Image 1 (tube, rainbow, N blue to C red):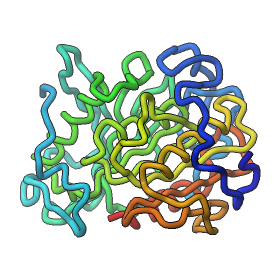
Image 2: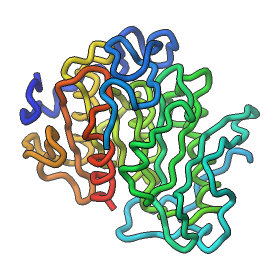
Image 3: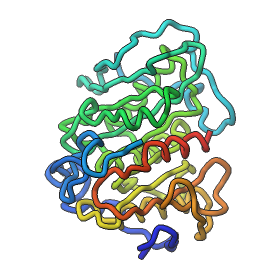
Image 4: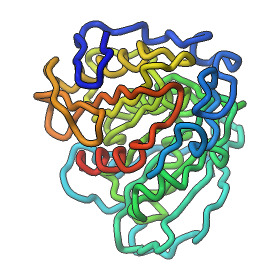
Length: 313
């Protein structure tokens, strides 16, 4: 067991990818509950309670938007264009003949010639994008990112590599790249609880687009393979989480250790209590952050996650 933050597990000792406390991913009742910070909760309300952090039609992603392997900033086609909006706004797109929503949060002082990171934040079961919106997350990025908070259908996620949520992701990336100044090499995903599963799934589904992910009290990806392309990953999990057992986080950690070519050894990293695994492929770091809390978003998340994302660019 990886009981202490500094202890490393065995990369091959993965849990069962589909194993969720209370049921398999995709079962709405398995993830329902209160807000983060409540031991029995899987529903991910806004991460400001309990262990809160302090700190058109479906399209295809263009080749420019998929430059996840290139170093430096890659300007999207939207650079130089007038911003479509200036305030946080609910957006709608059609995916598989169904209306899908997402809450879009642009930087307060948007510069249309400056490429911004694009960060997808996936809510826990039973929540919505707007309900999960985190000013703490946004403050951690210090105005350097455009935030997208998608809405899961019925408050849950479709954990398939070519499912409706992967299509939603494609459509949003294409729309944002065409209309906003995006660094196409800096597309990231974070999620809490069931949303953590969605974040790891995007790494598996769109590894040439997603630069790095952060999974908080989650698991996955579903249907993972050791031949999956590498994606940098920060896995955050509470040692006392009874809603999503730490074995789910360990399974995610071990998956990314394997596909990113890391060693089984690690060293202390910032923020504490994280450790960084040794020998990973360039810009494909794996951080394991086992904290002393339960099913919650720990206070180090916002600034620690943004620093991790930036380190992979």
